[in-house]
Length: 328
Ligand code: GZL
Image (cartoon, rainbow, N blue to C red; front, side, top):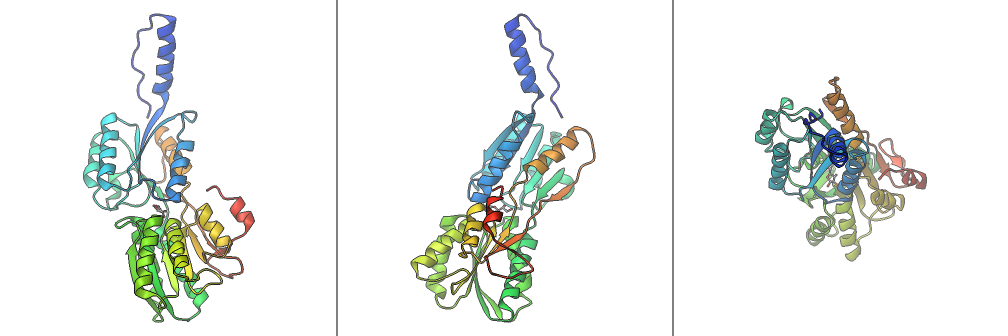
């Protein structure tokens, strides 16, 4: 909703101009976006997308706060948005838990809240809409692809998880485990958090190599940046991976560099998690502004990509054309 134009006394041309400028500013829809942080290429693409879409030219004044993967900072950012009287608040929740109190404060302030990207553990009547992806299905896709490729062969799996408590981590872990439970010939040797960062992925992989060198043939990284770190660690240890290597490497996100590695055969499978969500969120806000019905939940489309030469019903073989046509 637009803020009501305050009544203004117009004295001279200068004040008239400044009133017009203030009036133009007053016309902008104010949006506060409590962003997870800047931990990954995925996050960078998601932030850029919001800055592109919620622009002044499009009629918005975006206040995007990078909460640096700090849950307390994110709660504070949302409370500040409430105090500033934002027209809309968007939250990409670092953690799934702990949102009831601040959502009630937004409700009491009459500010619509849209949850984006990840999920929260709160009743759906505590916020107005959700736009995001399906990490559980992403995990199931990764598992089904692996089962298709192994065709009954043994798998000794190491998994580098995302940020502890994030719905993306929970969903991917549970989805993959659901498929793994159907395969007695699979063992998940270990599963540790790399916090969705490249440094985290490298540190966990280095630790895994110390404990399991020679025992594992599959590495699952819950985002591309962790995969880059794991690749560095395996390179340093002389462990081969990818389409022609000893270790099958699975990643999530399908960012540009992740798909380049997939095209090059270094990553066997990259399961997409689409960060381009801002236009969809803007569509929900526009319907709210117009007093129209809007979707309470909207899933953004995603697929999976595998290295060239790998036949699969669960993933598309990467090509240069696909890479050149990607938005991120
Ligand atoms: C997934 C998103 C995750 C990405 C990571 O929806 O929240 O956070 O998979 C990012 O790359 O850090």
